[in-house]
Image (cartoon, rainbow, N blue to C red; front, side, top):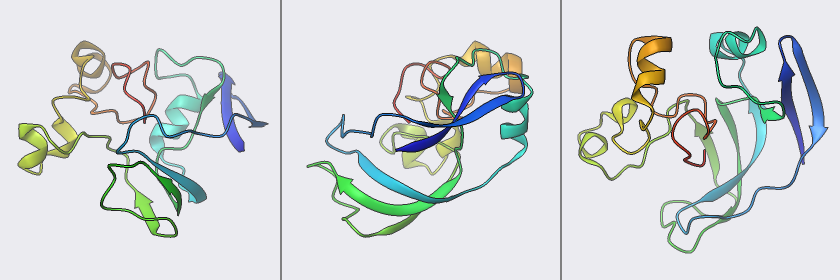
Length: 137
């Protein structure tokens, strides 16, 4: 598939990257049809966000079509149109059950990084798993 990849300050490239695979039975693979650019993307482009690695794929607010779902994903089906917000959350912890998705207890493993950069935990804000505790997203 094609993706916009970060390679350093002000260095982004459209590249061919491996197709995604279902890693967790609750996963879904979405073919991206549109992607927003927001202030966070500009911070990444300008290398304001620490921890970026060459080859990281940009774009964390997008819409698209579900192409495949894992065996335990009961909410989506192939062909569904979806909009994906910037927060990444488990949907099962106490905070998620309360509707506080941005403070998900499972996707905020690197609290110090979020506190330093933003004054609060990121909840997988950018989708880069090496920045937010190793979670896919």
